[in-house]
Length: 289
Length: 131
Image (tube, rainbow over all chains, first blue to last red; front, top):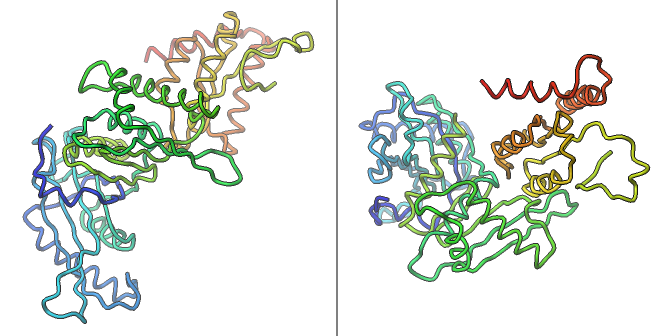
């Protein structure tokens, strides 16, 4: 796996990103980023005028910046990532005050060859979109992109099946320093009052379990993930007489990253960023297709 | 007759009518339901697998709540030479249509349809696998 420039990708770490899948963008020109920033800025200002104000009572000048993330790509076939940032400079503050970052969103494709291989010319494939910030800004930016590049955004939910894949994979990664516990959160179905069960496992125990299950390093099969999860379920049942396999897995957390079924991820470690992004790109592509 | 797992309690054996068909229900949101079915299958007499067993996968409308791979269910059904039906019980139309299909299958399994036996299900399945 390539080692991404830690400084350039630092903005990704330790933030909760909301995931979307995006269909290919039509007519996107990498050289026109400044123009696009200007157009998006004008669009946001116009929407504010229309009364669709994002923040009531606060006068904000919204500054838009678009930049390429050359490092955020997997193979040569991938498009470089695209970062969109909305910052504010309050009119009341002095000339020297710094812009405050209000919202960021970035498009990326990490080994998304399955999609980019099959698109006609003039389409740019960046199937994964991650946002951090108010939902109202996400809606504004999203609708501008949809209008301008004829693409479609959809929230990317993560099924329990995919969450278990993630926890098995991430629990097996080696971490240099002391890692946090591997945690799985389950939601119990069909109860009058919602009940969540949090199952925390010592990271070394989880890694030891995965090491006995995984046969080929670098390769993971569904069968291996099933065995890993079955061991965890069996252990829990032995102690608490509850079948976690009948509940819905809603969130997984490891020292590498955490993911929630509503399509929210947090990546904690730059070393495994490409792997995590690759998995998320795959999920985004299967939602598109 | 509904049961949460097999084998059926032996105390009621003498009161039970003849069993013409067994439908194993698998909830796609529950890994446990698949495990339960796998264990229960062991208690079914081999003769039933000549067209009198069917797998019914429910909850397929909720793609984002999947805890089981549909591939795994299809492989299981293939191993037991039995058909799989997919449905979403929450939708009335699909629920009614599925019930009608099962009823039709049951009529055949019970021998109420002249000229068609449960064995035809097995041969029908083989044809679709050849595609």
